Amino acid sequence: MRIGFIGLGIMGEAMCYNIIRKHDGDVYIYDVKTEPVQRLAEKGGIACDSVVDAAKHSDVIITMLPRSEDSLSVYKEILPAVNATKICIDMSTIDPSVSLKISVMIQAHGGHFLDAPVVKSKAAAGLGNIGIYVGGEKEIYFQVKPILQYMGSNVLYMGSSGKGIGMKICQTTLLAQIQNGVNEALAMAVKQGIDVDRFTAALSFGGGQNAYFDKDGFVVETSTEVIDGVPKITGISCEEVVLYEKLQLENSDILRDLLNLTQTLKKYNLLPDEIQYDSNMEPVLYYGTIQVKIGSEDNLSQKVVRLSIILPQLDGLSGTLHLETWTPETTDIIWDRAEEQSETEEETTEEPSEEPSADTPAEEQPAQDVPAENTPAEEQQPAENAPAEDMPPVEQ
Image 1 (cartoon, helix red, strand yellow):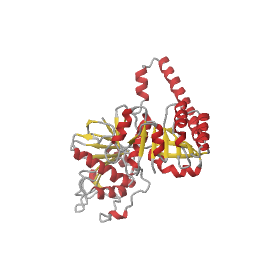
Image 2 (cartoon, helix red, strand yellow; image 1 turned 90 degrees about the vertical axis):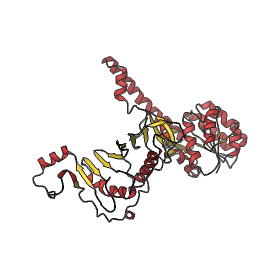
Image 3 (tube, helix red, strand yellow; image 1 turned 180 degrees about the horizontal axis):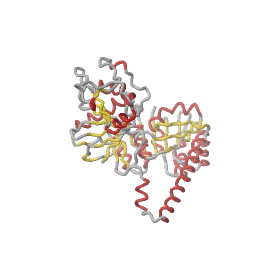
Image 4 (cartoon, one colour; image 1 turned 45 degrees about the horizontal axis):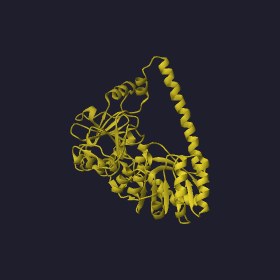
């Protein structure tokens, strides 16, 4: 199926990039500005001379335009190329009455039309993690849903034509009310004599510039935004961050190992809150109050299998799990319980169920209930619904 994408603005370029890298077929691109066209053409997109050129070559025509008049103008211009084989998807946020007008116009020429506005940010668009509200023919929606899923992780069918843009207006109204609340809070802060910059800093979530990269290490977005569910990578530095280029670390071996680590953890649905590289450039995983020291890449898959078994047993505890010395021969797995927690347990536990052996330090007891070390890796199946594209940000 050939796809055309018209409108490569702030959101459109990131959305189109995800289509280009995921779709097994031609993607025709057009924008009035040449720069985004050139960038995406270098990634595999096919540059077109006009909106009509893009429409003629495409089975599915996607538009992402800034204003109602822009959408109406583009669809009037491509109308001669529209027929029963064409599916048009307008992902712009426009006047619902204009969207319905376009729908009637396209259907009158035998084509199919969906209104599919988007929510979330540019950073989410780069990760293929936006939300999409869809209105139009249900059969057509299911036909193009795989294409929409190239761009969004939450694709919702809202009903007949106009229902997608209608839902977006509802969502925008809600956000406006939230913004009004922020404005009132700011006014209150000023009245209280609180410095505006400090007020903003206090409400900010994150602050540094983050580089989000995909499973191959290519930068898909840079943003100050911190996205929930995407682990943060710290302890490594980037020489330079270039959008759509491979992440440039001081040591290329670290990037290779990092990609291998994140993909292995994703396979077992074990992505942590943070991956911190220590002074030896070895990764430490953070799951709430639990640290996990992985060590080198040696036996990584087997270490992660054991982590998938042990981690649920540590729920509610604090401390460090040592897997860095584990090998199939030594089978060393040590659980260092946090001192504060150990003291609390000593105060509240009248009689421990099991005393540590005389030759093993108390603070380095093996993890309790660890499965036998000969448990084969094949017994642990990776989570089938693990997300495919949410990759970690690296703080610059």
